[in-house]
Length: 334
Ligand SMILES: Cc1cc2nc3c(=O)[nH]c(=O)nc-3n(C[C@H](O)[C@H](O)[C@H](O)COP(=O)(O)OP(=O)(O)OC[C@H]3O[C@@H](n4cnc5c(N)ncnc54)[C@H](O)[C@@H]3O)c2cc1C
Image (cartoon, rainbow, N blue to C red; front, side, top):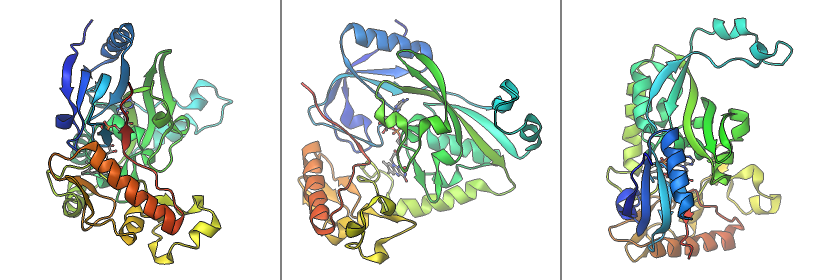
């Protein structure tokens, strides 16, 4: 056994929402060996397991987690050679010719451990003038968490620059391409697979002459207005709604001015049904944003879920839209 599990781990200290009871065990995973060892250890004790990053998009129950949370801490940021093109492995296979790959001198490939903080990665890339991630500066959490949920902000998403992820599951390690990961808005196939662990990721970035850190800092200033430092929240609670996915009769009920770049912001729908400023116990929906659920200090998961159910159902009644949580809600299972 090369990992040291921590017993009785306080989830309210771990998550950015500062909500959650006690997890029976927590294990830090810094390598494939750690992961295999922790998986075997948990399996031998028939423990329920959950892979997590930094807990910035999770709502745990007040009753805690009766199992082991496996925390992604795989380190490392390295510039690497381009991945082997399919045409190199098999000349008859479709794909860019090798000459084309090596000619793209502005491209740079960076391999990153899943446990690296997204902000740390962006700062590292900005300093080296590698563009592609800079507008996501300010999103908390790990690179693995960002890949699983296809995190994004200010016109950039993880799927725009990710080319591969190295993933472990109980049958072995495999490399998944961007196509395999089936990214959608705040979604990848990994969200549906609780037995797949992101070990590392490969990003394709572009060399540029811009002061990328300046762009990032400007964005952070704007973000701080919505998310003041120290706010106890998990980011947006619900996903925005993709207009194309709505039946025509539902779309007709939505004021056209609500539509932004093909999406209807959940905050706009929630605001119109009176969510802003609503409170249950110590949980509150921000007065300035209908999709920002905040823990004022000592809120329970029950408080939050109560607010979400109340205003989610009002949105459904008024607009016919069923809001989907962006946050992972981890129920207690007995
Ligand atoms: C103040 C604030 C602002 C935010 N702003 C944004 C924003 O602008 N845009 C945005 O997209 N998000 C935003 N978020 C949400 C959150 O930061 C992102 O979703 C982030 O990418 C989650 O990373 P994490 O490491 O904390 O993952 P966690 O919250 O720990 O986990 C998220 C999901 O990933 C899974 N997971 C984590 N690690 C692994 C792994 N190694 N293998 C497999 N599965 C894994 C978990 O099971 C879970 O399903 C914000 C959150 C906060 C608190």
